[in-house]
Length: 250
Image (cartoon, rainbow, N blue to C red; front, side, top):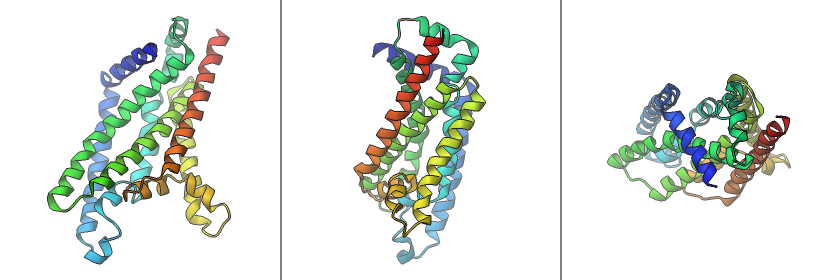
């Protein structure tokens, strides 16, 4: 897999020498900073009894829609160029003529996307530090929250890579990623709509909201991790197939 690592390094370098990386990270940190301020103001205004079921950590990491909606925007922006731009500019043909397997191309792109995903979240550790300065922090809940975020990244970025592999245009790739992730999010939200339905467990299993609700409270539910890894594996499999079909068409 040395070729995959080389491709990943190339992609990471191209991410961080382009303005888009810094624009995305800056916008993300501004958004998350404003949300952090709003939520901490909300917690400070609650009584001890009222705030007991909504800790700062559980609120920040998935307690409101303010956590999920921006991900549906930022993830497509990050992943839209990974393969689509290569195809548009013609460099994909050069890459495919090199002694590199299709799976290595996809894995390399995916690893680069995951590095960027982690780069988005590492600065949010500052919020945990600020909370610890003025109150008690459950480090177990913090650790499981970031594990949940990592799981979400596994399948969100995989879906982005897949849509980029299917598209020749970055904008089309971003739109397809947004619609797919939005559809998966809404499918999970049906858990709260059909409370008495026999399908509630299915909706609950796919619910990213339920996913983070558990992890932000320190509960590591392996079912959600299996779901994340499974969706990521399926998406990457089809991404490899898309790249292979491109090689066969040459």
